[in-house]
Amino acid sequence: MSLDIESLLGADAKALLDHKCKTIPKESLHLPGPDYVDRIYALSDRPTPVLKSLQALLDNGRLRGTGYVSILPSTRD
Image 1: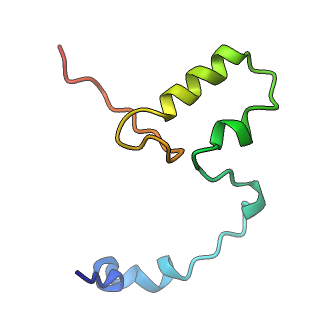
Image 2 (image 1 turned 90 degrees about the horizontal axis):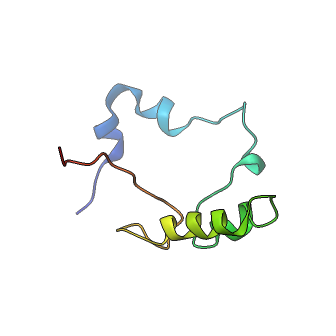
Image 3 (image 1 turned 30 degrees about the horizontal axis):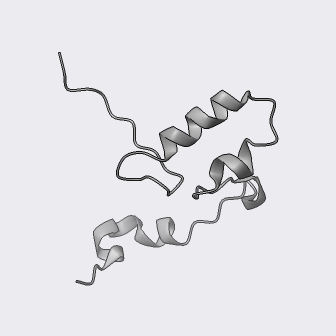
């Protein structure tokens, strides 16, 4: 199935697809990945249990191992 992104975006397609950010340098971005905690937080002053908890959070759910986490509200009352 092929999606025509430009038709989905409508009249703003060109502006959205050709946008170049001039305020945040791409070197400042920390992209997610399976080694996110090691790359970003390992050399910080955070205690080891905090780093383990963060890694455990990233290693659970449908997005486990990607560096992304999805936190949704509980449906329980």
